[in-house]
Length: 417
Image (tube, rainbow, N blue to C red):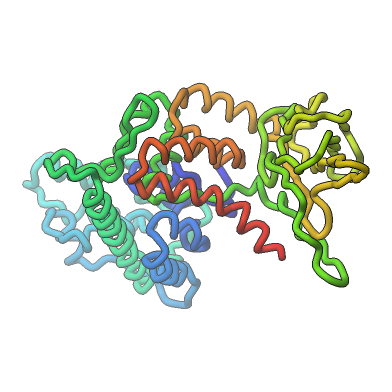
């Protein structure tokens, strides 16, 4: 289980939306939403999350209010099954921390009550700790005001999520190839993906990628539902800030490097590619480690790509440059004030997980694109999403996923300038 300081996974969010988490996992998510607006935004969307985050955070702020107990009327209504949904939610939340009210509940069960009702009042906990005080948790933490806020917010979160998903479904249905049958109207996203078809319906059911693990399916489902991807931490710092020079600005570079730049790579011996310099007769390539030590250098080559001849260290960051020879000139790129061309190798654990997921994804451009994006393999993710867009030129979801990956390199440079 991850620390509460880390972001929730796509599988956590999916389980929370579908209400499939156990009590401990649900409470962990609630506490995380109270301190992390980004994860709440991923759950609800920007506009709804701001208000929900504010209310949820307030609900967990300590106060000096006195604890309370359920009234006899509330206990009687709950015991006889006549309580409305709001009262039922309040009662069940209170039972989790107040053994006194649990004991009093049994006294309100009619003697001639049906067997199912008597069993409900006397039943054992559904989860460990159900209707019992939690370890290290004081009953004073739940006050009348706080319970009302939390209960109201829980209802609001469900309503907001239902409204958002309904609006999202209607919007996507309106763009779905002109289909108007009842079955097509239940589809949120429909994409051609190689030789198969991928669909996501209003209930969150994903079809076409059943061979993927539950974690990978949750990541794909999250990407389709939001038309967005979470930026991986692995690419942070790979676009170094430009070097500031005194005097007039430098001319534009005579030719450009192509790849890999500001990305993670899976291969220990990646292939370096660049654009041609008009009139150049040969190129020399150099690779440096994070301490600017040269670890590899080519002979003069005439091609526009060069595979690194030695295995590089996994998890390490490298930079590279190309020197072109034209007539009696030697022209090197990148050069100041341009930033270094850097890339990072996927670490040992990352490559193990990625290769396993890649084997399951087979020829799915969508699944491979999402997996590559989450691993920081931007070049690979861009190629997969580009292929998906070519198969689905009218899909706004495919287009947004491609643009998201492309924007990460641009945003990295802008943020550091």
